Image (cartoon, rainbow, N blue to C red; front, top):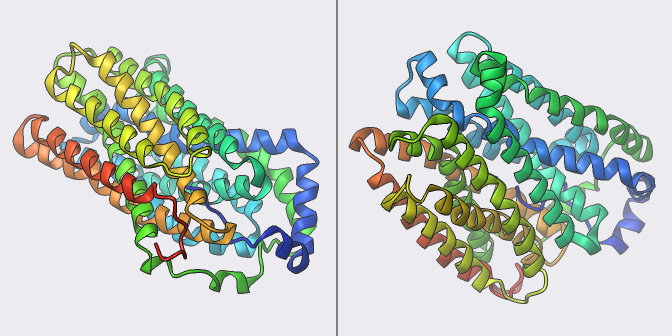
Length: 424
């Protein structure tokens, strides 16, 4: 997250049975292996933040090793976000060519390779590995929620809650274990590369699913080409832009926190290990919001109050970091984490709720992924630059409060009881 409900463009279930019987047969064949499918979904979700969250507690060591200034160090978290946005453009096309399951499996293999590349000696390998990690996560972000929507259409809210919670769990474990792994393995490189094992295990689990899907379709194609051209014009829909900007704004706050929260604590005198634990605790608490908010949103016609509520929680947490960063660290971490998890879950859920059909949801997700993550990419770099220019965290945190205020306004718009194509 910081991922939207999207994937390969789909058609309505009744139309799907007529237009694409091989695809339907493949889905039914996959549904006969629910344990394998569920394991694949959970493992993929665990990987979608772990490779990023484990960097934050080690950012100062990485910067010191390569003699990087604060703004340059923030590229370690900014580059993946840029490629998460750019990679989202390619995901639907790849899935239509090779099939969703095959691309998901390939993305996990690519993620494993990117994690390993980050620890190669030259600094260029670090940044190149960050790009590969971001691109592979983009494929997972776009296609995995779409697969959930496709295979569990009647349980989208509960599966979204499970998916987003597993994603946050991966980030929590990664953040909490980053420093202990560094101490146990002797370097920050050992800590970072250890997460390639999780990606490798997930890829192995997806291999049989990719094989089953390709046998079912014959070509691996996911959906007829004509469905891509149908649907409302998202670029002309204010509602689509509100959902996209809500996704981007909450991601911006999330990745600023991922990049700089431990540094904010250590700059105010907290020990590195404790700062890592507080950050991990904040990430852990996100699971509460990411599980509860989608469930509530699915039962409400309007989600405007939820949008304002999660934004207010995030703003309170940021204000706490501004006023008493060390004295109230655990409280601010709990408040900020709950708000962040809720905002992520709400952003994911609104992809479905604001769309009239699965095809529109897929297109909206691609738009939100691309625009949202490119917007979010500016956060860590910009606030790192402001911190470097001002010498403290006051101005960056004030700017972050402004983003939270904008997020509340976007939540009011995106949370309306409207669907794209209804004149919204």
